[in-house]
Length: 286
Image (cartoon, rainbow, N blue to C red):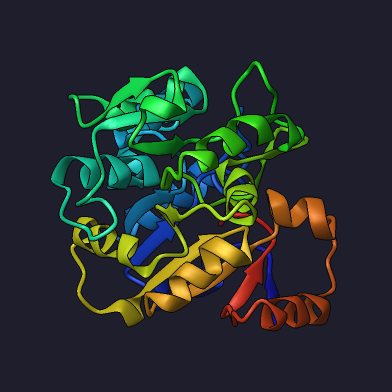
């Protein structure tokens, strides 16, 4: 597998860029060095750029976060989040998993994620006995983000009432600064062990790429590339959607493989995960 220093060697090969956020564009606290300059180079060449993130919040919330980090909105063309898709699914109730759901949700996650149920697409209840489904957006401040074990009692209570789970972030882990923290997917794994029924909204589901392609305004998927740091979600999702993928050696990949990974070892890892990215890049930079 080729290990590129940045995206310049491949820039003219693609017209559209689908970028993960956490671990590629930023570390949860700040934009990575070189990202803004790379995006500027792409936009100056007429490329289309859309962010696709498994964040369990609506796109407007994610955009506000990028604003606070200082990323100019002129550098990208749109944002699609798993929170936005979950909100649309709860609003429309047309998907087979969502159609029979009631409107009362027992929530596991922080209050900041509740944009996913705004406009009354669901109502929160405090007792799983009164709920129609379990809304899982990830760890909360009270139980912490280091270990999924403190969430087991709440998950067991929900499973006892056979609540279907809507997991609004399929990621198992994320890097925030230098810390590796759990995500909603880690709680979904426990729920599956308990015999619960789970629907994960976001990558690697290829369906989430359809609204992204609409945002890009492109129909030829061979001219689109996705960049992500996680084989299980970013790379697998792109492959399932018929889109090329680049494996970014930042975020979780940097945590796992260090600053100077062996390209052949990376290829073996990718193939073991069932994915075959066109290359790896050290970072999203020009």
